[in-house]
Length: 545
Image (cartoon, rainbow, N blue to C red; front, side, top):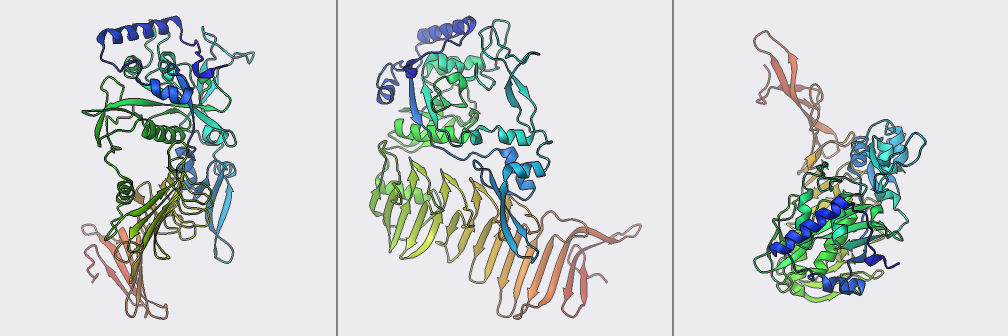
């Protein structure tokens, strides 16, 4: 079967009438994109200029369900490999030595009440009658119903995991029926779902599909390899029209439906960059006739003619805030796949360049996406034999490996060394130290644990720690941002050369130690010295009398 041009007759008569009406109105207005605009694209991939579907391989990414992520995080576990189902945790053994242990995510969920906690995301199932037979609508399609499910069920049924070992593909279509059905007869329902008849209102913004038909929107369905029936799509995305004052291009809308969001978006972004380049850099605006589902109506796109190879290297550096003194880019060598995308073969880098002053750049990609296997850096800058900057990415996401190497390490600025740990793009704690970031200077080190953009404690570790080394003593300041009452939220110890505590400062959040009818006394600070003497302070850090 020639599935690329195979048309599934799933629209009912009422929906077909809407399609015919909208296409007719679009033709009368004459404000849309030429119907042959995408002909060259489909000729290139499908072999026919009048083809309506094409197929491309996916850029696979490890997409983590946020509900599972948050639940594990709240119990001290960090996801290491979502698809393989592995999480890690730092647990002291009987000798009080830190040890990293790993456990299956499914087992952790069972041990932390995941079998009973109801997930926010429902399970979409086929409705069955009392005889356990599928209930079908007037078109013979199975009726889908939403059902509550536990966190354990959510994890077990997650398509981002269930497709481990199976190959995925993306079918991109311009056929009017496929575009009309972007959210109809699928495993998802939203505001563009078509009404079934004149008495059905359908999705609130389903009429915006008329604009998609008029402006060449391409619908992309994520499919299992070997399945050519788009009604079985795992997820879907859209490539929509954007215009500048002089050019038209297409870029993926950031909101997708179904499963596999990261896979869909990373694949569509690489595809759009390659197939819809723009000549001149500038701001491109989403066509106003299109439904703005992701809320992004303006984007900036770099022009192809504005960039030389050296400019591309410069953009890589500047996008990371790397300002290398006396930068001189030369000897740029790239390795690409047949589609013209940066691609590493084996251990061979995808991009190398000299940066001047004995500095070199090396990068690794997989089909246009920054990626490196076997715990190796995906990007590295050396000065001579010394590494001054490195990144570790897994399919485009900063990701720290199980051996606790940071996902980002930078020693290019003012003699400082910065290290940050990530898991699948999210800043995460290093299970050994209990901190997600570290900064070292000659006389001071700063460590912090950041969760969802805020500094928080991790298990018994503080939210931040500053260690300052002086001529004769060391000061260690721990901040516990969530402690209140009788538990100090700041602890600062001063050590002598022998490591003995000579001064211990504790600060409290409004802790009442005594009270008076008219003048309650609140202790906010306490200093204990080596000789056992104690000083207590009020909110202004003045001594109590």
